[in-house]
Amino acid sequence: MERGTAIPLPRSAWLRAVALLVASFVAVAAMALQVRPGSEIVAVVFPPWWSTQRSMLAAGSADAAIVRATAVPSLLVVRPDRTNGMARLRQAGAWFAIDPQAIAACFSR
Image 1 (cartoon, rainbow, N blue to C red):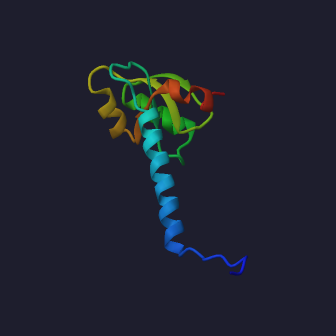
Image 2 (cartoon, rainbow, N blue to C red):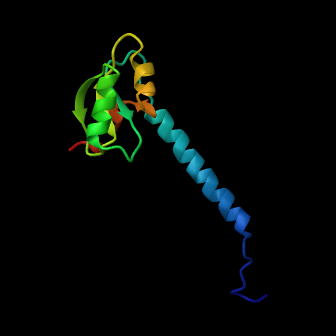
């Protein structure tokens, strides 16, 4: 037997491994960042190319009270209106809402 001859893995094996890693990361992040039931304050994510001003105007048009801005211009911590507030934020352009405590350390100024 000769040493030093490794059997190369096909490229598709690496792609599957990377895809599984990305999928598991997304699944864990989705579970960790979920908004808790009954939360009055949420962090909303607007499109990343939006400025802070545009994100604040969109949140204001949905009657959401802005609690604070973050270091990321398209991520705001807001208190949505009690009547259909999350639906209005989505109509104003918000992609999704996450737990503000989960992002507090990462995205504060």
